Image (cartoon, rainbow over all chains, first blue to last red):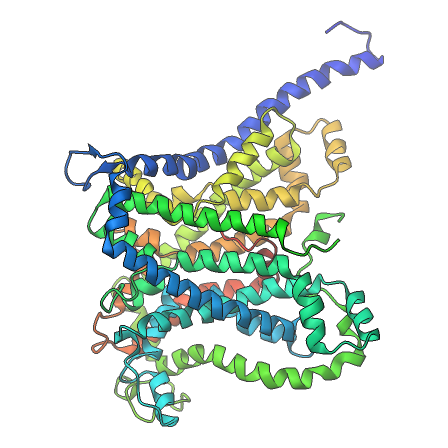
Length: 309
Length: 295
């Protein structure tokens, strides 16, 4: 830096230079806490779990045996894992298959302003903020096989009372219903947001052409909100993959493992039996499944989804 | 999009074309579907409230009581006086508030740095933070649990709080908002010789308050409700949070359960999130509708 007379343009350069150094310092300093925490508990943890997945170790013993990819091979032959995988697929199908269309249906009904629209949005959204454990506790009472309200309704309707959570074939469905109750309102909000972004003039043009409400829904609404739909589908699948609290409270994976999903199986293997290597391998598999989902969402969004200008 | 406050407008408050009077009559047939659906969605709450107001000997009556004709408020007192129940509530509130305060501090610093400070590597840093957004916490529970064990943090507040203080979600959310602050305002402040910390605290944060509030509401509820992690890292009642405590109150066979007390306990557990939700409904819905992600 050359010295310059005060008052000239050049005199301003010095602070500009030190300003840049100050930026470098402040920039890194400010971002450091987040970077360290996210680095340790996010990226570092993933690298560590990747390493652990190559070991055979039961947490208590001091022996950590390096076994390479054997845990992954073992997973493929583990009937418990395969069973959990199938139950998870069934669960995903049920949760997303019911919740997403239902949420879209409700969203279409309340996206337009009318008396009470806000109230309904609140009503459907409230279950989402209730702690899942509290909801699950309520569910266990609602679906109690002896005195639960649902069986009372069944009796009024002349239907035979059901064992629900004590039944191999029904327990998963009861948990699916809890998911529907919890997340419908959340997806309604996402859909309403998407619906309100559809340009009104498209509907006006369709009106001119004499299109029916049904045609307008299929030809305008659905294509226009497809980015939202894609996003909601992905989020719903991810939430379903990670559903744990309700299973722990309601069934603990039973009866006869009918509600043991991947995440619950991971919990059992990792934190009850301390099969650290195997559970770590499952964590990696789960991560890959979820990343694939996210990737498909990105791909799908750019490929087949209709984007508005 | 101009000032941050424009971006923060809640979708609930957006007036669309259908707000015109000519379409007002539509509501009649909509309600025909929405009211029954709404009743079904509110039913669990109603059943919970009614049960929580029954005396022990009426819980299993048939036909069941559908209205609290003789409300028994002492069920709530009994719920509250269960061993360690107030402690669970305190732990949940303390832990979630501590996490969120930590998150707001770390992520507003990080967001300011990424959004408004020009330093080498800032795009890489932001990319790195965003990458962790895709890692679900559950997948890292084993390694983080082992780390807690190494640090002797099992069954401590640190284990419940520290892993969550760095938040990619909060950082991402605040970056979006901080970017909306007009550069002229920042230039003016810096021209006056203000440091970055002063600009962040006095200029950016006041302008982006709605975004910070959204993050706070969403994450307060998320961490208050969290169950899996506290279940793993707590071992004694003194450290358990309310979701974990609640799960312990459900008897495994279900036959010996005092459902009225249990429903009262659940209702008490719900109250803090319900209050938060009612206070900040618009922040909430805005927060969820834009990102669809938590934490």
